[in-house]
Image 1 (cartoon, rainbow, N blue to C red):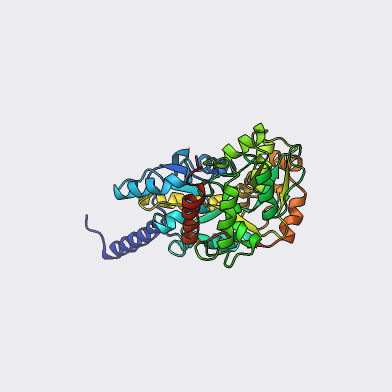
Image 2 (image 1 turned 90 degrees about the horizontal axis):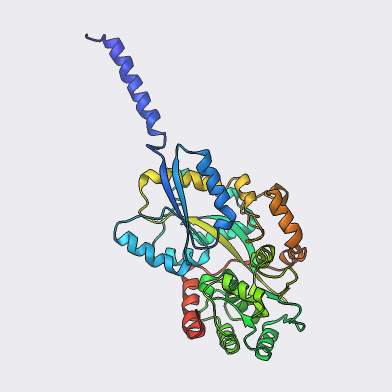
Length: 389
């Protein structure tokens, strides 16, 4: 049957409209499997949020897997996968360590401003402290949790009565009690990083942002301290286990690593913290990053997932058991919005003095990517090389 020219014209217009409409709809051809790798311990804060997305959108996500891995090993693994044209990891949860290494090695997909349309107004959501930490991502990731961090000292009050308040006092205490102070390799430890990057401020080094040419006092101090430290564990969990078991009396710490192990019973609840005199907080954060090479059909789902994790309900979950205290990165999320269990944990194991310490002392961002990698390499080579495990 031959169509009238009028009807044919209408059908043609309808076809154009439908084509335009379909082109604006994300191409979710079928639910996808999302593989998430955590190299920061972040899933303790966010896994319930990720699972809530999976359960809410079965039309987008068929399966979601979670894997933990050491931060120093991830960049090499990703580089090998990308060289082979493989993509087994869709989303990485990282601290500043693997974030910096991945930026330096060009492993991450750029998100901002490249994909800004997928994250409308996202930077306006961040609170002031987290916004400074977001800048460290250089557009390659989105911050999902935040902590003012450290450095702090954590100790057994039954064994430590002359509590150090300065680096000089810490060195004297360590020398008087060899083997009783321990901290983990900074490249794989939040407290280790906070201690490493906080020392230039405490010691009055020439340039806290330049670990190679501006940290003469810091490197000299760490080498002296090295003589009375038995060894450097590969992660903070091992440190807290030894502290809790009584084989060590003191370690460097940060807010979340103080609260959470006590809440979990790994470290006795009676253990104390001490801030350094005239301390500067070195903030810490965890980020969501997408490795290069992730298939296009997964990207729109990942973008939607990342936006979902920055909504108030999921952000309130990051108070968790105090592991990364406080946790939320966006404005206006308070402890009374957190799950009841989180509120109870922080009431029991939190420290009221943290509010004043955070308010009274300056907060700075960690080293930028290339400087952080350089600091880790120098520490590994000149401090921890003979004693790290």
